[in-house]
Image (cartoon, rainbow, N blue to C red; front, side, top):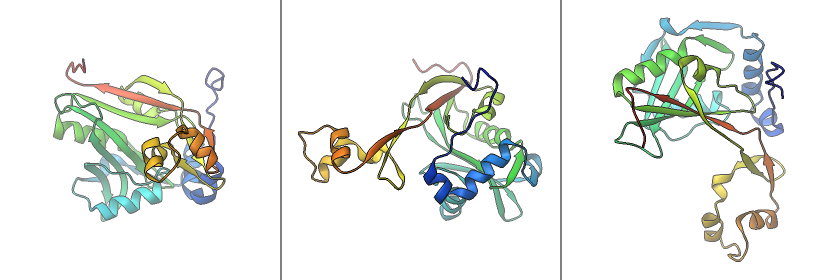
Length: 221
């Protein structure tokens, strides 16, 4: 409904506000044009061999979902300071080694880096000649505007949820039934029944949008 009314609605979770408040505030400022530090991506230097410790700290400090395993890291630096990053891994359903996923993309908090998305993804495409690139945006906070501007198209939209312990939300993949059974839970119960029995409750978000960029007439089927 908000999109039909041309309203850019964002939804903020209590645990994010409490434990990652500076990142959330930075996202809000970006939405309303309140950033006080503006950089031009074209003036920043690309680095591709970035220490994993540097990547982990940067993503934990600047990305709401924090660090995640990835095989390739592209960063924009001003001197020795990392300002923007995009990480990639092979797609889950890889076709001839040509499908890749953008795992993480973010700028340093309280920064607007103009052209950072285009410069980073463009450098990756030049280096690795992918057939398809996919990524996901969180509908709670983002419209996927950067993806759309680059020419990526929506291939799917799906609901998402977390399990909450009353303090913070946990990714549902941590609580797959096979994992729950390994931890000694009752196998006669379903996964959700086990979680509820253990004191968790399910909370739903606004969903995720899957974006896709096809290159060189690539076809996955």
